[in-house]
Image 1 (cartoon, rainbow, N blue to C red):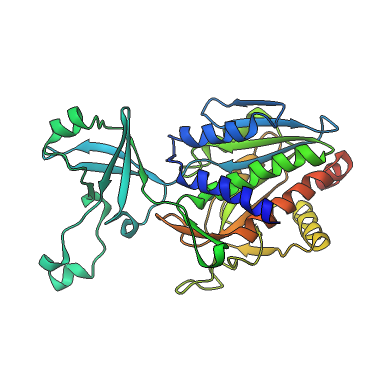
Image 2: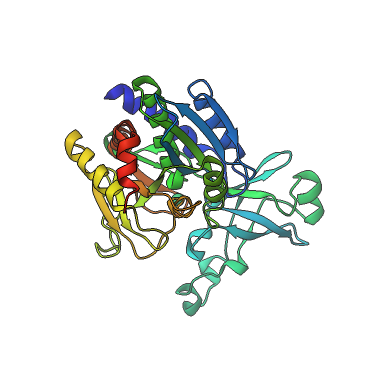
Length: 363
Ligand SMILES: [Zn+2]
């Protein structure tokens, strides 16, 4: 198990530290290509930039599609003020509170420029102002420029440049918990990469498409276009789940616990899973003794929803690595949940032969 954990950790660290805000997934795309190019039969992309890899098994059918999104929450340069401060356009669902007093990296055409989203010091705030949320319209990034010209000419910052959170991978307590940015959805990308590699070794009675999608955080855009390209029989979204195991969140809001196994969503506001596919995953978890968690969420959206609505409709499911503190600079995941998700997905694909998939598609 240690060797598996070590290799999972290597990939997770690499993916978490890569800078790939929505629409600017390039560095993550390079990692996905590097990890897969010697493993899969072919690797290409859709017209939006999603990576589509194909791993042939013993049969050309059924076609099994994994989707994990490469993009992370980020910002975009809206404009530069006369004084040289950067005003921003959020990319994805940020809370205003999560944007302030953080470090950022602006990705210019000449390289990375660090900055900080400072706000007025509390020393000069009225009692009333201190208890209020600081609105995103007032947020700016200080890059140390002395003027607009300085920011443009010396630092090469332009409107439209992407801005990524500055936050780095670290191990926590007992080396089992991994703290870092972008677990949504680099955790899912890692599960996808490792599942594909193990399937290559073990064999499988179908053809597998490992897809790393773009622009999930702004409306599942890459999942829609890549699912059109793949035309799958089964869709499996690999995501960061929503852990409900820390102060301030209730079991009615989210039921997954970090370290208690991978999860499947039974409901989110974007998708209902196929019931037979759901039951198959539950059976496999039982057979393999992998603890499996369920989550019923009122909100959320994930790539499975776009895949499910492709063509005449595709049975789909969303499989998760429970994650704390989504959509912020730093989240927390457990290595056992990652490994459990990989083992579960490997066995699921190995059981998805023509006959099984025909049954899943019957209503
Ligand atoms: Zn996600």
